[in-house]
Length: 329
Ligand code: ATP
Image (cartoon, rainbow, N blue to C red):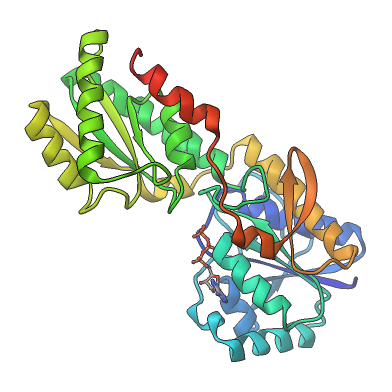
C-alpha cells in the first residue's frame, strides 16, 4: 500500500482525533502516505483533503473533536455521487479508505465499497455505542463520564431543594449512555428506548417508584434520566404530569452537546488507538467492506453488512440491577 485516506463522518465523538492519529501513524509506519478528507463524505466529493504526517497528528491523542471536521452529506446517498467519490479516490492514488463514524456512515462506506475495488474499513466512532459487532465505540466512555459528572452536580442542587430533576441524555435510539450514566451516578429512575412502553404506563411506574422511595429512604430528591427524544411530546409534558401528580417541584435539564465534547477519557484513547491501528492492518490484508472492532476484547474484522443488520443489546445485568438498587439508595 502506498496511500491511505481517512475521514470522520456523522455525529462527532471524543476520540475521533485519536483515531486519525492512530490510522496515520500505523500507515506511515507501514511506509504509506496518508491524506485526510475534510467534512466527512463532502471532502471526498469535493476532493478537499490535507496531508497527515507525524507532525500534523502530534498531540491529537488527547484533543476532543476532529481536526478533519465531521458533517452529514445527504448527496452521498445518490448512486452517481458514489461513482464520483470512487473516481476521486482513484485520481488521488488512494489504496485504502478508513471511515470513522456511526452506522449511517457505515452504510455509505458499504455502498461505496460495492463500487470501488480497494479496501474500505469502518472505525466505530460515535458516543451512542449503538454499533453491533464491537464491544464499545469510540467516544462512548467519555460521554458517560460527562453525563455522570453532570448528574452528580444535579444531585447536589436537587437535594438542596428536595426537587425532582428530569435529565435528558443523548443516545439516539439506544439507551447505553442513559442506562450506564444513571447507574454510575445513582439516579433513581431511567427511561430507555429498549423498554419504553407508553407514556401513561411509564408515568405510573415513575410515580410508584417515587412513592416507594419516599417510604424507603430519607433522601427526598429524585433524578430521572431519560434518553433523548423518548418522551412523547417532550420532557415538558413529563415534568408537568409529574409535578401535578406528586406535588413536588420538577426541573428539566438537557445535557445536549457537551456530551460530544472534551478530551477523551483513557478508555476512548486506548480503543481509538487499537481500532485505528487495526483498520490499517485490515487494509494491508486486502480485506474489503470490514469494520475494525474489538470483539470480546480482541481485535476483529467484522463485515459492515453484519453491523447494519444486527441490533446491539444492553447489558442484561445492568438492566436487572437498575431497579433493585434505585429503590434503596
Ligand atoms: P451518529 O450515529 O453518531 O450520528 P452516523 O454515522 O450514524 O453517526 P448519519 O447522519 O446517520 O450519522 O450518517 C452520516 C453520513 O453517512 C450521512 O450524512 C451520509 O453522508 C452517509 N450515509 C448515511 N446513510 C447512507 C446511505 N444509505 N448511502 C450513502 N451514504 C449514507
